[in-house]
Length: 605
Image (cartoon, rainbow, N blue to C red; front, top):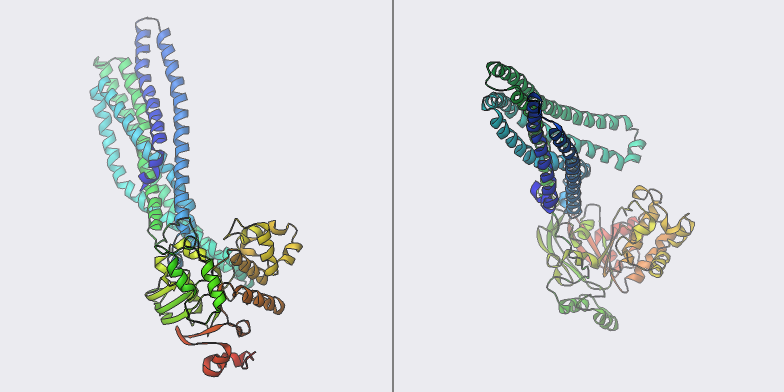
């Protein structure tokens, strides 16, 4: 998996690795030059050339080392950037069902905290292991050339240290994984509190939530300290091994100098190599340690990339179904499920185009069964209904009847367990997803507003809308007065989740955002629940006007908003029990009559 992130930067990574190798090579030459310098001094020969060469090597080592370090660090940051872009793009395509089973704070930690560890894995682990290993091998070869006996002594000490490291390294991996998981839990806890901070404050639950946050932070601290403990043990083991090797070589080498087996210059050169051996060994050990930490992060990233996701968008967004020409769309536009004015039907057909179809869309559910999870009860039990193009269709019924779920299935946020959901006569799975959603305007029940400016929110679904279109929609939804009062007009920041707007204003923003998309199918889920009577009446008139040229679906608990609908679908316990007009249902369906009587609407308007 790591190689997948590194592959686009392989050439710059290779350049940095080569620079590191050249830096190591210049360092390896220093002991040999130093030995020659000592021998020149002993034999009373000129040392100018040796000093000059030594100076050049030192400067070259420093310059190449700095350049190589920069190239590697820059490449590592590029790897992190690529991972974050890929992961964030994937998170945006996650299926809603996958998000329902995940903690948003933990997912955010994977994009931020986990990807940061890739920086160290790329430089310290991947490159460090390669360059450090090659430098270590070259150093050992040169040490063997200088004196094989002292090399044997050095390797014996290193083998003992390697055995100890083999025991420590797996513990680093486990501790690092638990530390990263703890960071994710802490992020989830923090996101939970900040997302409902008003509720927490109103309930006086700050201290309880504070304790929960502190507990999550302390668990992260404990696991991180545990990982640091084993990492420190690994680093100190390598350092201790090199110190032991130096002392052993000094003792054995001193004895060999005393017996005349080697010269003092040879011993000095070998000791310098022992010093140089520390760097590649620590580099290799550090690479192994960093990889264990990075492997935990990579594992968490891989888990995220295995979550079910929607197909990547094609970028067309024209509203044309996959493999469909104009014929099925035209048939849907004039399908006589419900009487439509002949002139309007002809107009609808003429507006359709095989490349970018216009005009209202039709919708049908056929024996749809659905539940949100295998361990949850069914929400829909064979739901069947048809909505012809154009006009307003309302969905009413008790809470939990499955009304909002209808919209979620139309948007393909979820897939039905059985049955068929069709738009324009074509099953929803046969549409390209971005084209399907380009056909739909959706106003959610809680009318979310994103952090940013009012303009950003309005143009979220149609960034290319011109000023005249925006102005018209603002007037239609009665937002023009709000814009006039705001200090910066459309450029005013609305706050986190629109906290600077009232509930009714947020609903009108959500409706305006949906209308700007010029949808062929408009879904309104309790879109007027937070509006006052004046604005509700105005918006009801607006929706009725839109329904003349668009298919409008409305979920409503207040029947006053839908009594004039062309058809009303009454749902109860996941089933469609009746379809008709307000008059017909008051007279023919007991549940609807009861709902109408409760809201003083028992008689027809």
